[in-house]
Image (cartoon, rainbow, N blue to C red; front, side, top):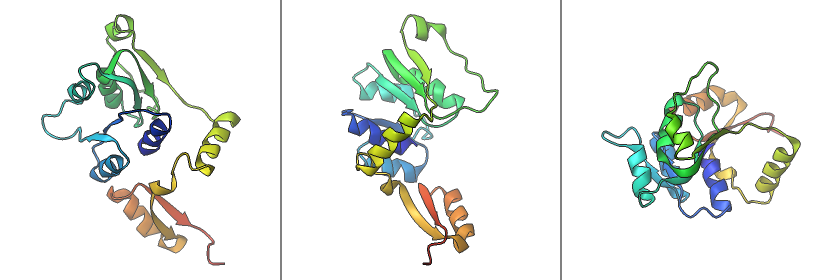
Length: 173
């Protein structure tokens, strides 16, 4: 989802897209697509300080959290500028709790929002972007397997060396 979000940001003209990604394979793919990347697991790395450095000390206008972890949301709140927006795009598990300094919301006027939607208009917009080539989802599929290779497909998916895997069913015609 993060790579698709990167592609979407490019289509609307975002000039600099920062990507924090611990997986080396995904980080390389984000860099190839024009993202400025960081490994947040690297020793001594402060994602918030990096985001501020990359934005001349201001912070990001909008931060999309595409992974469903509380730590990622907390990190995002440190990366956004005053008056900016943090969008929780990756769903958090039920029962999760966020502890937010109200100063960030009140004095810094940061907007914290979530997005979850499957309306007909959203599906139409997404399918239009895919079919018109606005978003290149095909490049997200890094491996294809026949159904009788399902075990190998799941092993590849678990390896961290793949983005999305296409499992072909009934393609022998």
